Image (tube, rainbow, N blue to C red; front, side):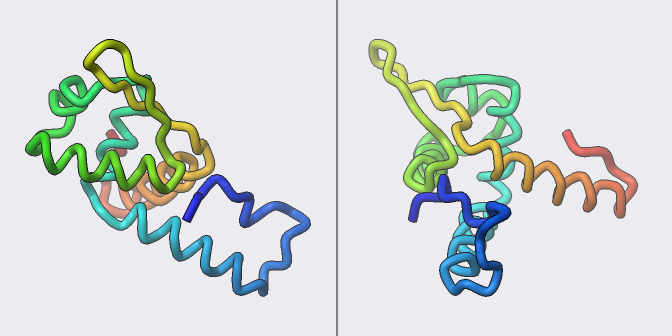
Length: 114
């Protein structure tokens, strides 16, 4: 499901099943802490897998799996340069939601988001 849809546009019927389905899909995609870390790393700009692994310690296969999920969901875009694939954020609404939730949690725990 493509998260680029404007599920919460002002003229959208908030009782629509489609709105709730799209919202649930956003939360499903964002439910993995690794994906939140990837999004946070990409907030500073486009990165390839090697650069992401320097910011988010995990295995290359695990990173690739999460990047693929975020790409298929329409959160990330990618481009190839030689043998490298560079990822970037293409859905600012998801980033805004992530920041809002993480900031509120950090405030509640006394930590600041990174």
